[in-house]
Length: 150
Image 1 (cartoon, rainbow, N blue to C red):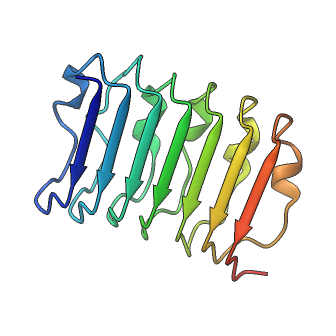
Image 2 (cartoon, rainbow, N blue to C red):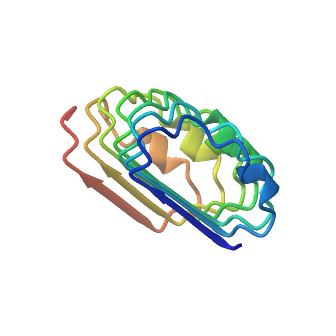
């Protein structure tokens, strides 16, 4: 299996078992309101796209640090997210989209992503300046929408 799409799984609490799918290249998680942790991903060597939308419970992304070959990360609507810890381990990450995180304040983790070319940020209440992004050497495109902190 190369593609796993989990949508509207109202009882899904974790990702146990996903680490047993070594051929996975894309994982989509949409509207899984009880998904409290991303643990269970394991070291997916082929996973290059991870999309999480409408899963409001995860408070951090530390479990994604095992996805060392990830190239595209989209996380939208995880309202409890306050940290990007773990994302700094994703050395091949080229594209990041983060949306609807009113409490997210520290973007310094993104400065360590030397392969990052495209960054889209939307609905971030604590974004006050652009200084964090000046250090991202390979950044070609920065999109900021509805940043209420300014």
